[in-house]
Amino acid sequence: MINEDSQKPEIYISSEEIQQAAVRCADAVNHFLEDKSGGVVLVCVLKGAIFFFSDVLKHLSQIKDCELDVCRVKSYENDSSTGRIEVLLDCKAAVEGKHVVLFEDIVDTGLTLDFLRAHFEKRGVASLMVCTLLDKPSRRKVSVDVEFAAITVPDKFLVGYGLDYNQKYRLLNDICVLTNSQ
Ligand code: IMP
Ligand code: MG
Image 1 (spheres, rainbow, N blue to C red):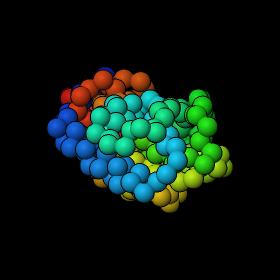
Image 2: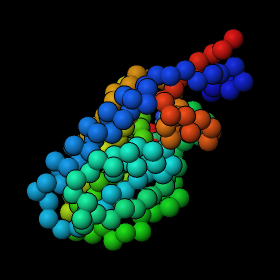
Image 3: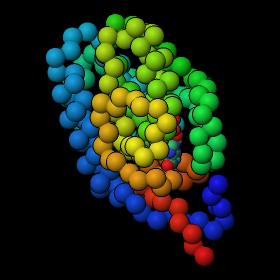
Image 4: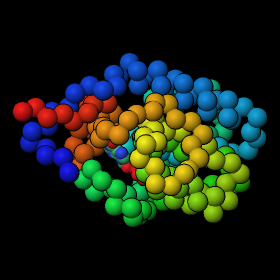
């Protein structure tokens, strides 16, 4: 548990580095969609991926037949995974037979993504690409496929650019680590 009163956010990944990561991600998505025919659904995993999603969208080239959607799952309380995944809002788009690209803020234990992959595969997607801004592989509890991970990070709790600690710090432009200010 983090003692919030003595914490101040310190820049860990700058907004410039994040923007470069968004461009790299868009390149990977453009490449993935190159040979795909049929509908595409781009899904933002709320709330954490909201900034990453919108920044990547600005750089996509194949935008004619793309539908945007969101889903929301909850797996976290405070700074540790509860291990329980709850669907708070399911993706409403008809994804059966479509190419789905899922955008995540961070893959940590992998439990959320493992759940989401199974969830979308059960709904009969034609293909699934998962893009995450951050990847914390040292914390994995389940092995899970991630088609694109922009930045690998060590076992630190990060906030900003959509990532929160108990709903705080999401609006920071940089990704920060909470450090002890005392
Ligand atoms: P997982 O199921 O453990 O992989 O966790 C996935 C979710 O936990 C992410 O989508 C985040 O919302 C949250 N999370 C994991 N690590 C961090 C972190 O360092 N900062 C903020 N949220 C995190
Ligand atoms: Mg998340």
